[in-house]
Length: 86
Length: 150
Image 1 (spheres, chains in turn brown, cyan):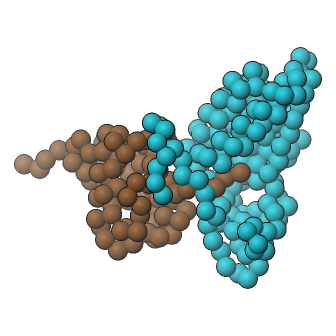
Image 2: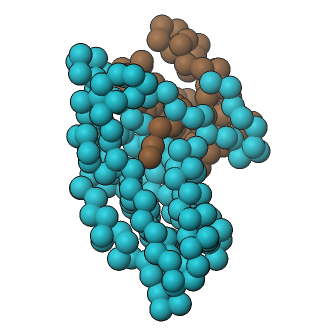
Image 3: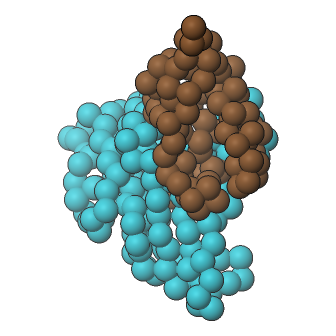
């Protein structure tokens, strides 16, 4: 039996995009995974991913979310580097 | 009705100012943010703004709605530009109108400060020596108000 999992569309912007050399990844996580589980999973990929901050600002489906927020199948999660608009 | 937009076209400040105003308003205020030719002692040739566009529009609408509460009118309009900008180009325009000037100034200031704190937009500066760097920004607060560690 394959344990139930959720697929997260993960987006990277600006400095994170350049660091990782990608703007988007599909990440599979166990059901019940949180934002912070997603970040840990990314960092454990090694290489440039280990340079990501452990507690970056994150948006789930276009709204800022806490590290403890639960993720659902199909969520769009963006890692948000420090912002510099204006 | 508040108005908020994020786009690639040059910003026409008169058009943004034209979105606010009412017979009861004695104050109309326009703020523009402009690309300057220096930052932290370095000469800047141009900048590129990147955005998480779908979210940026949503956040900018939220900011405009919150500013309307601050001002006490719904006459708040804000436009942010993304893409390649040259020195002197307008990156953001904010228009507010209200019966008296104090609320307009307060609302306008609120919008630009909130943009700096939480609009998902990033700025890459191009210096005269050819080097390009992302401008160090602010880390948005999480919903519980805890400042996240960079």
